Amino acid sequence: MSLLGLALVYLIGSIPVGFLIARAAGGFDIRGKGSGNIGATNVLRTLGAVPAVLTLLGDVAKGYVAVRAAEVIGPEPVWGAAGVLLAIVGNCWPIFLRFKGGKGVATALGAFLALAPKAVLVAMAVWIVLTAAFRYVSLASTVACVAFAISVWLLGYPQAYGVAAGCAAALIVWRHRENVKRLLSGTEHRLGERATTA
Image 1: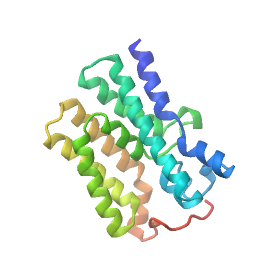
Image 2: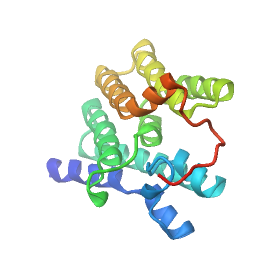
Image 3: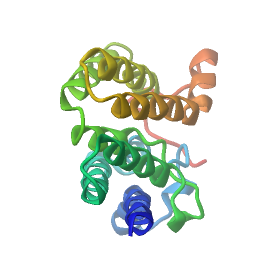
Image 4: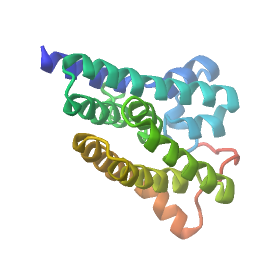
């Protein structure tokens, strides 16, 4: 039953929200537009604010629900931590899209809202400041993830949450490796720029 429960958590994380919204709102495969990513940032550049907000809320919601589903398996912190990682893995490598998905930021946000909301507030503050200052979502997201992982440890959350936060931060930074290359070369898109076809 535990294995079935964890599989369900992964499947919840695998729901390709941005892909489904782009199909419904624009009638196309978002993976063929802009950066090719199914996340809210690419949906914003490709379809506009409303579909992007729906994508963001959907990804956050599935992360939160996935963790709550994992906690049904057992009350110990390790189950919630496992739920976080499975939700993020599902988002990044969804079975429904042949394991080619998003970068995990919004899903991680929702997942950790269920476990470490105070640390999430720290990460959100970092994200807002960096996004407002530089308008690079990728830069803000990667730095905020690292700040979040540090905050989880400093705020005294269970060790399992700290390990999950560290793993999540490492995974999300790695998923942004191409963005980091573009940041270093000065070719990364800023927030609000319209996308061109990939």
